[in-house]
Image 1: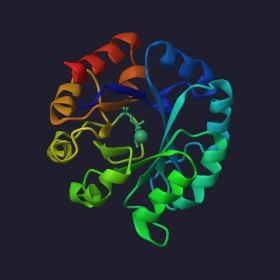
Image 2: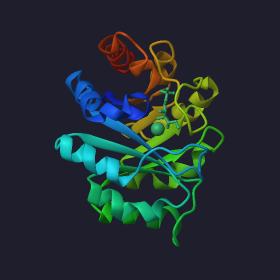
Image 3: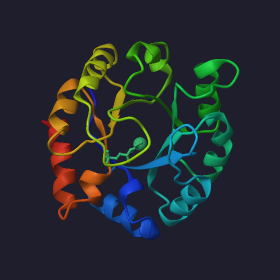
Length: 220
Ligand code: DX5
Ligand code: ZN
C-alpha cells in the first residue's frame, strides 16, 4: 500500500519569489517540493543548482526538498546537494554513471544521508529499474521528455507504471510531466502515487483546487 504525495514543481513558480511560493505550496498541504536541476547538457534547458537549494533550505527548515537531477554526471552533485540540504536525490539512469553503475550511485547518495530515486525517460524500458527497486526510495517515470514545463502528458507511458506497481506494491512511484486534473486519473489508475505538477498548479487561479483534485485522483 501507498499514500498520495503531492510534489509541486517550482520550475513554474515565480522564481524571484521562490520562498513565498514554496511556503504557499506547503500551506496548501503539499508534502514535497520538486526542484528540477538542469545543466543545459543532459537536457536543452538550464535552471538552478546547489546555491538555490541551499537558500530554499534556509528559508524552509522542515521542507522535503525533492531534487530531480537532469545533468550529465549526477555523481558530481551528490556532495554539493547534500551540503545544500536536499532531502531526496533522483538521478536519470540514462546519464553517465560512476564506476560500478547505478548500484554505486545509489550507495553514494545513501551514504550522503539523502533518500534516493531513479528516473527514466519516456522511451526507456521499465525493466531497467527492476534490479534496483528494493534498494531505492522512489522511481520516477517521466510522462514527458525532460527539459521543460508545460508539455503534453504521454498516456502511452502508463503500461510502465502498471508493470512497476505490480512488481512493487509499496514503492513510491512518481510521475512528472503534464499532470493535471484531466490526466491524473490515468496516472493514478496505473498506480502512481507521487504527483509532480508545475504548470497545472502555478498556471491556475485556484491552486488549492488543483492540488486537491490531484490528491483526490490518487486517494479515490
Ligand atoms: C520537466 C520537469 C518537470 C516539469 C513539469 O523536465 O521534470 O518537473 O516542471 O512541468 P509540467 O507539470 O508543467 O508538465
Ligand atoms: Zn521534474
